Amino acid sequence: MNTPRKNRLSAASLTLVAAFLLSGTAFTAPDCGDPPLNEPAIPQASKATRESMLAGVNAVKAYSGAVDTWLTCKDRRSVEVFQWMTEEQRTRWEEDLNKVHERRVEVQRQMNEAIRAFNKVNTDSNS
View 1 (cartoon, rainbow, N blue to C red):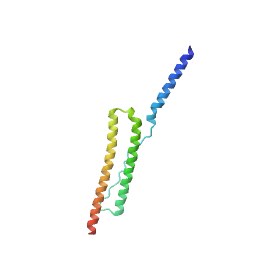
View 2: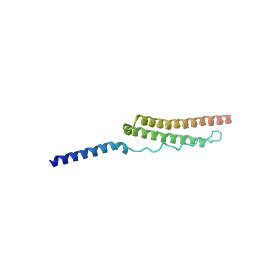
View 3: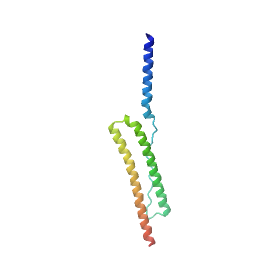
């Protein structure tokens, strides 16, 4: 009679360990770290050279690429962690991602404005 009880405990222990390991996969997913915070400086069109404008464009592209990489990581991570989150937490997660994306779009918009202003200044001075 002691043997069946011992087997039940072993089976219960194994079930508990298996459940823990399976539920723990969400917590072992790679962390994406903080969002990219290294926003590039946008050159002042009136003082910029062609080289500094090109450097600004390249810096914005690199920043945008870093944001894309981070957002892609967060999208993959969400698949693993959303099952453990409340609706409020999911909403906050999405709001945070949207803020990072919106900031990136704003940086790109500022760079485009600087390019237009640079081109206008240089076109006007060449006329």
